[in-house]
Image (cartoon, rainbow, N blue to C red; front, side, top):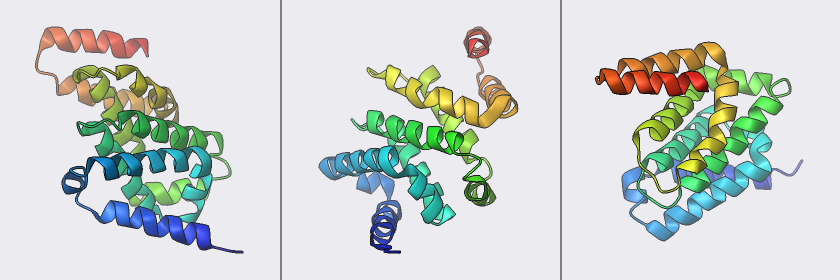
Length: 177
């Protein structure tokens, strides 16, 4: 019945998500520690995260983690691990978390598709020294989205590619997934 940990978590995540991301990431050490904390929390407490925090805050934290993937920093591994743990636990406990997942989707119906699109476009278009870390959350995100949503995201990516030769190559590779 003690809600201290949940209240503290709520306060910390609220503070993180209130900040302007561009300004926030200018503090390298602070950003690094925040993403490491998010990674650790998702690894150890992602079920608590989904069950106890307001859906809007959960969505903001997911969006903050996605921004971490898109920002030039050394925190991509932490962001990928956090997403992997969160998505894997949501999928593994989907029956127990059904009402929580529905609440998330009521706030942001396409959040899992956004995660998938961000991961796929990053893997396809960006050059990273640590591209392999993006594969960690990719498979569970494809699974949680299901075939229909995966196909929709795939088609969106292909439609946005103006180069016919590159589009064909991307389609070939995405069909292998």
